[in-house]
Amino acid sequence: MPSHYGQFCPVAKAMELLDERWTLLVVRELMMGSQHFNALRRGVPRMSPALLSKRLQTLVRAGVVERWEDGNRVTYRLSESGKELEPIVEALGRWGTRWIPELGDDDLDPHLLLWDIHRNVDTEAVPDGRTVVGFDFPDVRRATRHWWIVITGDGVDVCDNDPGFPVRVTVEATLRTLTLIWRGDLDWASALRSGELVLHGEPQARRALPRWLKLSSLASTPRPGPRPVAAVPAVRPGSARAAAAGE
Figure (cartoon, rainbow, N blue to C red):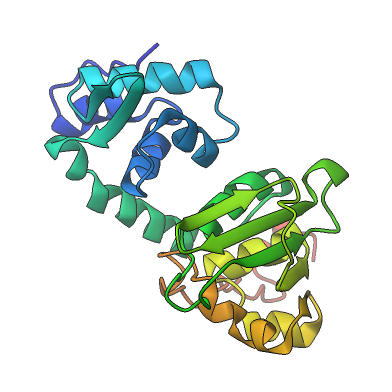
């Protein structure tokens, strides 16, 4: 059930719509350019199709999303009010990058990571023709260990089944390592030097790969320095605190 705060505060009224689970992530996917149901699903792979459909219906009724039909093809786009959420979602992303850097194992998802990477490929930096980049996550279960990004003049596709084309370069790393690189928490050079990431393939392609695969738009967000540790006052022998502690 949608939240109802019983307040006239505009923040409370906005949150009655936006704080339902997955809602802002659906808005995020629309911001990233996904316009069709299946593309939206790939950006929220752990969200059920039924719930995605329900959230889209709610956003359409609220006037945040526009729904267009062209024959059997349905397109979703942010409305004028939906576009006003873009700087808010971006600010949340920057805040999360700065202040909530910890990632649990359950936060790591190869489906979402490769989907994000594929839509940030710099196609102008990639050679003409077909270029295939492979990904091997040795720490991931076999069914989702191998991935491929296929780059052509017609666009960029991500595959979880071998597309059958020659692979120019393969990235071998743990899922966490590549996620940290994508987020900007770890740079390519450091990961290569430490052996956390290994590139296989043509030397020229190995050198060029970091230019082909652009990082998250939030990767450049400045991180805060180490958090200061609160000083604990020294306990002087003979003081009341020392007596209470039995010293």
